[in-house]
Each structure stands twice: as structure tokens, then as C-alpha cells.
Image (cartoon, rainbow, N blue to C red; front, side, top):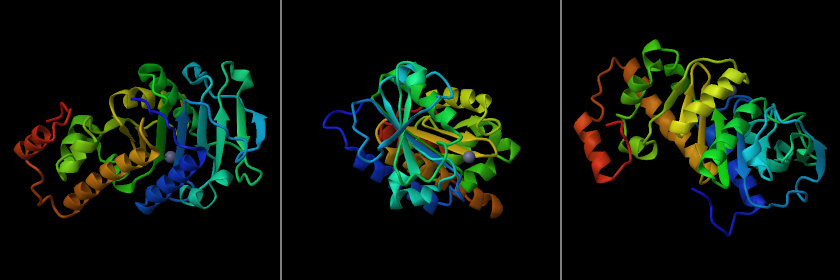
Length: 274
Ligand SMILES: [Zn+2]
């Protein structure tokens, strides 16, 4: 999947990232400075009017599939809920060169951060993998920390991916329609570590959202940053129902296997989960 011209303008991306940050914050998935967002753009885009300051930046890993592309990314320590008020102060743009040495970070004179997000390695690795595999010219990623999903990952039974999905897909018909591959799961890995990065790349090949055990989620979209935020919201809403049911003594029925199958057939959902 790739976006077709006429392509969105830089300011539209900045507004969309701001709105996604606000939405993720409204569902309590980005306490303090938790969470980060990046958007990879594969067509020529002029960023120097909004981000006139440039400096060399060393990429945390080689990203050959992204040569010539721009990645708009949130700054380390910045709050997702604040981006919309002044996107240029909270975001930077990495212009990825064919050789690692020539890559530049563009920022605003109002810049409020020293470095881009500490999870930039995970963002970059997934963008590179997705662009290399699908040839897309657009890719958005959001890392957030939704409390109900994260809580469930602390219960050993929910760390089994098939069980997690069986339990979460049963609350609303929309869940499987929007997450036909379900939710991927990766065991606890240290934040920012190469191990988290590698497991995340692998899991996001098969899923559009992945639960990082005892930490949070990462969601992707090759259509819009809004769609990536929606995926977090769908998954977190399902986890909220599951949590409500657990604390209420598991009294609810949930959608039956048969009801779910009917949804999948009627809406022609490309899934192997039911
Ligand atoms: Zn985090």
C-alpha cells in the first residue's frame, strides 16, 4: 500500500501528529513524557521553512531502504499531549541520506529537546523493514503505554498470544474488523534495547499493533498517523472490557465463536483468527 498524489503537505502531517498525540493522551496512554510518534515520508518534501536548523545526526542503525526519505519524529522528553500546541518545537525531521554520515536532523529555533526519542532505533528499524518489504512511500508509528493492555501483560496467562487475542477480540465486532491479524505480543525487553528493536520488527511484520510486555504498545499504519492511533484505541478498549470483566468476577458472555464468525463472514474480514 502506498499513498497516491496529491500528497499531504508538511503542515497537514504536523497537525495529524499533534491530533494523534492528543488522542493517545486522552485515553491515558501517555503519562508524563511516555510515548513517541514518527512518520516516514517517501516523496520529496521541503521542511526547512518550519525546521530551518540542520545538524548531522548519527543513525542508531543502517536504514538503506529509507535513503532519500524524511522521518518526522518526536523529541526525547516531550509530551505527546503538547505536540499539537507547537509541533515544530516538539518534533524534528531526519533527512536520511544514502550514506549514514550525511544524514541531517532539521529542527526549529523553538526546539525543546536535545535528542530525538530514545526509542528512535525501534522506529527506524520498523520503517526500514516495512518500506523494504512492501515498497510503501508512507509509514506511521506510535509507541504508547495504554494501562489496561499493559496491565493484562502482567498476568502470565495473557502473555500467550493466542489466549490474549481470544480474550480481547470478544468484546466488540469492530475489534477484529480493525485488527484482523489481532494483537502481536513480545516478552519484556529493556526499553531502547537492540533486543526490543529486533522483536518489535519481527512482530510488526505480522501485526498492525504489538503489545510490549509490561511496558506498552507500538502501532503502525501505511495510510495515516490517525489510523495508527485508532489501532491503539481499539486494542485498549478491548483490554478495558477484559479488565472490567476480570474485576467483576468474569460474569460477561462476550461475543461467542459463532457470533464472531458471522461478523467475519458478513464484513469479509481477512483473518485466520476465527
Ligand atoms: Zn515506553
